[in-house]
Amino acid sequence: MKKDIFRKKFILTLVFIALLLFAVSGIVYFFDPFFHYHKPYDGISYILDNERYQDHGIAENFEYDTVITGTSMCENFSASLCDSLFSAKTVKIPMGGAYYKEAGEFEGYILSKNPSVKRIIRSVDLEFALYDKDYSNPDAPAPVYLYDENIFNDVEYLFNKDVHFYYIPNMISRSIKGEEPDDFDSFMRFQEFMTFSKEKVLSTVKQVSIPSEQRGLTAEEEQMLRESIEQNFIPNVAAHPEVEFYYFIPPYSAAWIYKEQLSKGRYGCFEEMMELFCEELLPYENVKLFCFYDCYDTVTDLDKYTDVIHYSADINDMILESMAGKEHLLTPEGYNETLSEISGYYEEYDYDEMFK
Picture (spheres, rainbow, N blue to C red):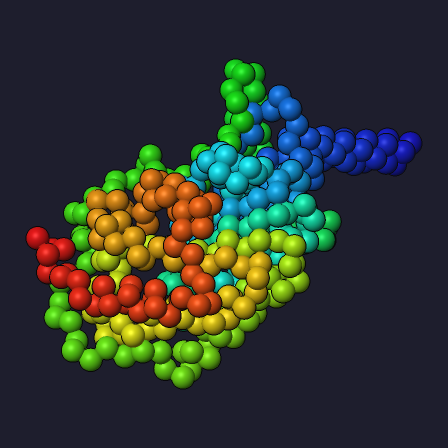
């Protein structure tokens, strides 16, 4: 008799635990703050604030024909401005700190999940040009369970502490109050949270004597960059001739050129890196490669930057408007002259004035 009672209690306990786990996981499945299982439901105020955890779900489950992606150089873009300029339906899904391999793989993921994509806008950061083709950001989270095909590791999402105690309660609270869900203008935007000033930029830059000799790319560096482009850009471009790839070289500040190129005696690399991208990508008719270093008044106005590379939202707006109007577009016939003029300008620029 006692054994039967114990057995019944044990079974009831297991049933209770199973029902509890089912209820907990069902709540996550329904609200799905990372869009892992389904597209967003009407009436729920979704929170967009975690690109590495939400990007893949957005790519898979949202409706769009245009994508803004890449590094933090894309975070201040306005998806609504892109919509109006390109007559598009845009999602902004950047990956802050993404090296070429990470960005290329995510771009491929987007293309595999949405056959309706017409246009991809992606940053081509020179900061990451001279890394191995397989290098990934070691400090960035990689929640593989949110984009692989293994259903068993979904437990990491279904029973995630942040999901249960931050995202879902706040989504419920916001929804009850009638608040609108976050949009792709505000997603990862840092414009309103950062200070943009010359003083802030130069606080990280030491004034030094510029070496008289400035080298270009070594043979090993050139080969490494070619291999990276051929692995992390070209496969997507070649496999999807129906898609327009708007790649842009973002305008880091003149302080970055001074600190990372001239001061280190490697200014020749600056032009040669851009030349390699032109050589490798411009043969493809579906690639439009833009360079904004010829926006001299912008690049030298340090009050538009929060550090040597991150610029304000008005520069993002300018980039979108320029791409829509095919301005600052590098062409097979003219890129050598354009890049030579850009290189010459910054080589002759008076950097001493920058520190006054």
